Image 1 (cartoon, helix red, strand yellow):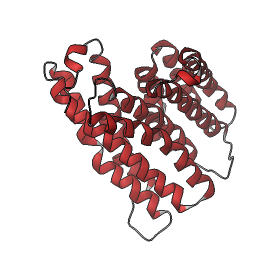
Image 2: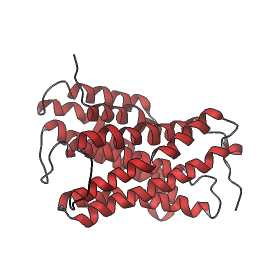
Image 3: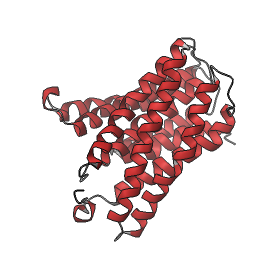
Image 4: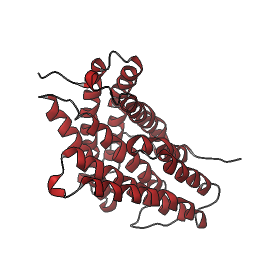
Length: 275
């Protein structure tokens, strides 16, 4: 019988469901998820080879996105999202490979290594794609909020990574705050878009859940980051996985992505009036 930790299960959800919703090609991601599942059947070491399909699919998707975007001088903010989201998936795949090979590089240890994979899939790729979707049809002044959501969400993961690698409070806590502000901006726009999708109740409910779910869990994330440096209360990693992690993975990310996926092709209902 396969025994998977909660973090393992969230990793597999990210590969099999979340990344295809972000980038398409569900069969390729599904195959990568199947191989990753097999990698959890044994101890760290040779089983790490089974994470390589995930890495190959992520790299191929990233290369295709770069080619499709064209010269960088012509990129829009939406193009930048399309390029950066698969690149974050490459980082997630590399972190999972490191975890399953049992490597301790750059002084990182478990469960932080596997959690790096989780965060680059969900807080990196998926949150960035959700922020990018809010750009479509957004009118002033809300377009500025959408731009802010994209920029904040894009820069937060590497800032947090610097914090972990250097053990410095400023980037670790600051990165958590930046990510929090980014996803809160996205959540605000998700809630505004509920009325735009009012003719489509499934999409409206999913967007509403996505917009409501993120607020308290991100406070927990900032508290956890601050607790690594100062005497403030914070949850343990297992408790964070059950609270912050599940709320973000299922309610904010998955509900938001499914709503956006179902809402494709409904442009007349997805336009915001200026003001």
